[in-house]
Image (tube, rainbow, N blue to C red; front, side, top):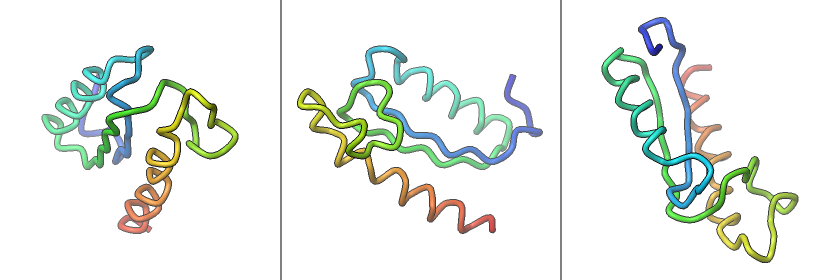
Length: 84
């Protein structure tokens, strides 16, 4: 369902996510490329599904990857600055 009408996309995913396979993100990125839609994609090797902002409120003892994944917010801000 990706077409040239899709607005620019920023997406991040953890490869270790067991709820949503990272392949879904890769397929989405491929579709964006084929439709010539601007995007930025970041893959993090570790971290479970549902990290949200990846801040202390989503951190747990079983989730040491939160600090690394938290960089997505700064990356998003930088990406958004290219449009506004």
